[in-house]
Length: 456
View: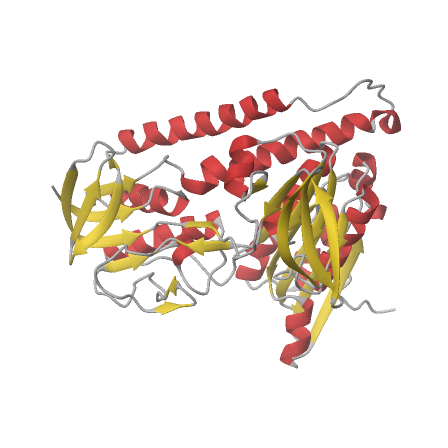
């Protein structure tokens, strides 16, 4: 069967690429070896956020008296939580399946690999093989949890994010190895469900990719919630004990040990590119190097999503790259900007950032200004019982270049900041917008005003 474009991988990047390709009039084939929607929909973003929503609801109900609502005997129901995750992911997956069919994208169930230039072989579950051809091929095979060589990592009760979400075990003591986005979000979930949670991080602080301010505020929130954070620690092994499991680690060159019922290894994700093509693609740190059009070093072969070097492993990154690749194959221009990709951590309150951080602005040596607003003074945040802060960074001419949030609705507010930065807005223009009261968003105006000088 011949196509204009073949996409290997049916996650956010792959299906976005296929749908955009057919909009351009291309004949598209999409290959997925597991479930449509990929890790994000089935074992990542969506079930995790479903659990985080439930965890937040549970926390609010337990604090009902604070808000004038009596709530007794509030407890998690793990069976219902599993059912809810399955319901949400199933509904979204069914909708995606119908959309792809409606848009006439041919979907092949099986493992796809490039066997020659312009040729992809699909190994189906029944043992048969189907050979497809196309002028252009897009690799969108995503990533899998990276498990470091820790002795005992294969013991029962030791999980990756994939297996923890599929099992959703009821745990009273959870140790999380890795304090990045995945680790901190699961810490939020399981602490709200009532578990004792400890996060062990090798770096000097949690959330290493994000700003020091965001990491510091999250660590402070975790302390208030009873989540223990151990930074600058190196895990040496996981062992079976009479009481369950024990995680052994070194801290300041001293051996330590902590007991657990379950251990989550959340030390990042590994790109799934092994054996994908018969030719060598240019790589950087085992991820595929691409240009601004998502083209690889091999003609007519594109790569998008988690397997690409130099980009954050985020679903919305993959979606954007998928649309860019489809445009390139169709000979169209794309206005999508990959230099402004917002990052979000769905703790409570949420964390988000985009653009240049304060540390990066300082390191550049160029003039810059910082505006801040503390959310304890924001009426909507106070009503919700949440605090946090906002920060905007402007260059020497007053143009917005970065933003970060730790507050309610941060995942939505960061889009407004992203738009402002992309449009080259000045702090003065951004501050001139009238925002509703009471709202979390009105603090954006206050933060922007902190960048201005007023005549007296």
